[in-house]
Length: 361
Image 1 (cartoon, rainbow, N blue to C red):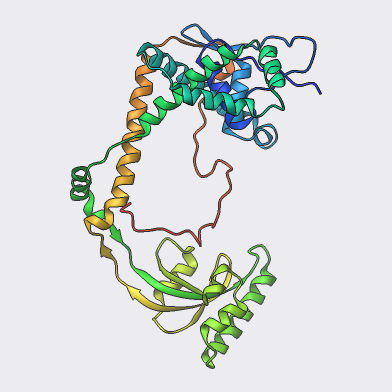
Image 2: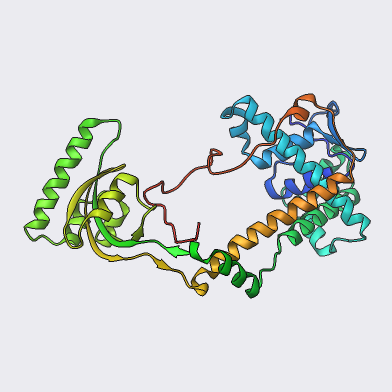
């Protein structure tokens, strides 16, 4: 079986590639061909250290599954993701160089753990040694590069640690306290009859079934028993009880009907999912969150903000003192990809079942 050999370069870029191998088994692809492969193309230089096209492919494989980026993404998106991968490789090289200059050394136990993890992916010590040799490495140079990668990981992890004091939380609450409210909420139970939004016939059938269920309720059949028998969603196992829900958790049409309905009177309304028989059991007005109730939200918000600000400043400082040359014209002109909920990653739950707490936004 012929496989492609991955160039590992001479600097921290190589170390990050090797650690990726330990984590994902994709970073080093060993060759079994007798003929030596052609050298990888340098796409950028960081203070004279080359980042190769192979290094870039490896880091890209960590950002998205290979199947996705080969088959399911448009070309401009792939270029954007490559630029993101390149920026990460550049930053890793600079972080590692800073750590070495500062005299930091990785713990030997951490390095040996990485070596052992890499070795475990081969059927024998001989196969592992052969793979190292095929990639122009000795065990000592492999261990050295893994050590530099461990330094990068530890430096990044150190930047993740952010302290938020009680005084910080109290000050934030004083300034933004009026935004920390738990909105009006209702204790809701429901019975769902599903319909396909693209098929009007299923909507008519769902409405008819919902109206029949409503008649059964009015004739005295218990709501819970009816929900267990007829409902077509996960709440049937709880007798249709969704607990307390507030505005923003339900889809708009169903939400309007729920919050306009009097308590204790079952009714039918359309939703994105079909027709629903529902009943409001109890209402609770909007209330101001206390400092203690808002604390977890504030700590999370301040932590995220400080972490992002600190990392941004660190990155800017490293880049300002570096010489970075991008030799690939397409990558030089590309904008890095921005990641969010619409990246193509799977979404679970959808609008209707999304839980949301009063978070002051």
